[in-house]
Length: 96
Image 1 (cartoon, rainbow, N blue to C red):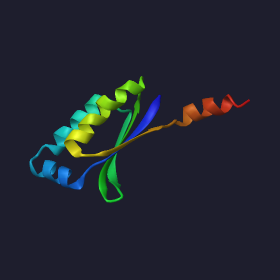
Image 2 (image 1 turned 60 degrees about the vertical axis):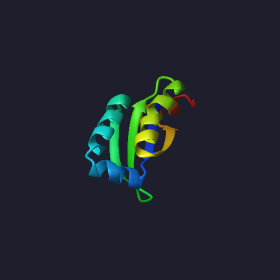
Image 3 (image 1 turned 45 degrees about the vertical axis):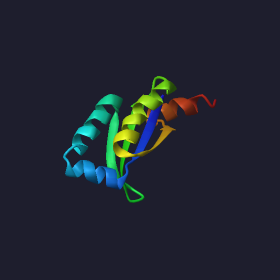
Image 4 (image 1 turned 180 degrees about the vertical axis):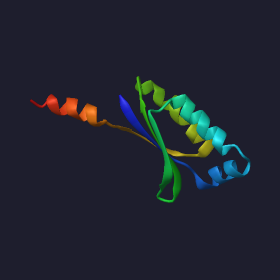
């Protein structure tokens, strides 16, 4: 299932990671672990925020994906099922 992961990171924790030079490595490791089809970085409600769109094969993956964000960045995490245009087209075709 295609999923949108939103990670809103703690400002103090990420400031520390930027100052000590580990922020780029933390982000790179997170992205490599998830292997998203798309990754976006912005601010949301005043926090550094990362959006990753990826294929989740099993909901049991959720803890392993989220823990690095919790541990390293004290992030608030949300998972949301999403569709691309092709998925929407197939879904609408099922309506009859």
